[in-house]
Length: 141
Image (cartoon, rainbow, N blue to C red):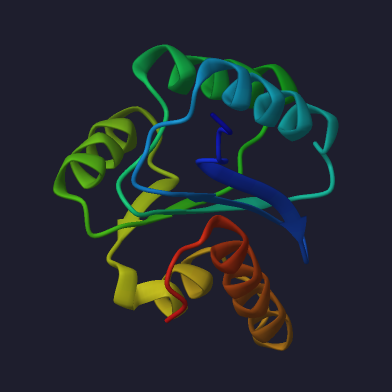
């Protein structure tokens, strides 16, 4: 049985961009992504996470927090989802990190504004979102 990726990560125009399917990432997939996030530090100033409902476990979120703290990341994080559970998790995270904010799937433009992505870069980021969605087999909006 071939396993399919549940997430994609890249850096585009100083934005760490992460997309999740409806499935939660396995530890090996998450560990590889966290390694890349750490190696890419300095290439991004904010993070945009888009999820169809899947996302990291409590332990995996702890790994991401530890990585960001170890690297001194202070940027804004926008999480785009319609999933109520995921939005609840983001709200809980925002109690400890006010730079984290949730957005609905129709608010990608608002998320990019929140992240202070320059208008001249927003089309490039949206195109990359579409490319990653296609790679994950997700509908392109």
